[in-house]
Length: 101
Image 1 (cartoon, helix red, strand yellow):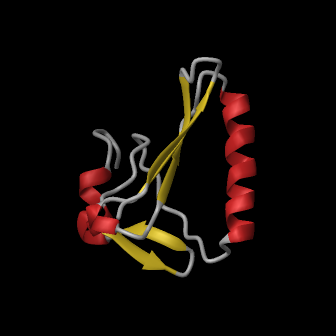
Image 2 (cartoon, rainbow, N blue to C red; image 1 turned 90 degrees about the vertical axis):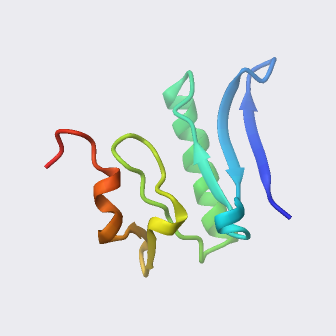
């Protein structure tokens, strides 16, 4: 069974705030992705509060790296560390932005 949920803001649910999901390559490992939103300060407050509550409820939660493009790496390219996940050295070139050195 997979998990997929979203948090929307606005009278007509026109502003996506967060997407919660697992996928075939990381079943049971639910990822939460937050949007910058139409109002970045409001989105940041929501994100900060949600993250605080998530870590309070599930203290073993691990952070995912966010790439310069804003993307989250593929599960197969991640290595678990004591501080969260990092991109495997063998996959790092896939996540650099052209012109990065």
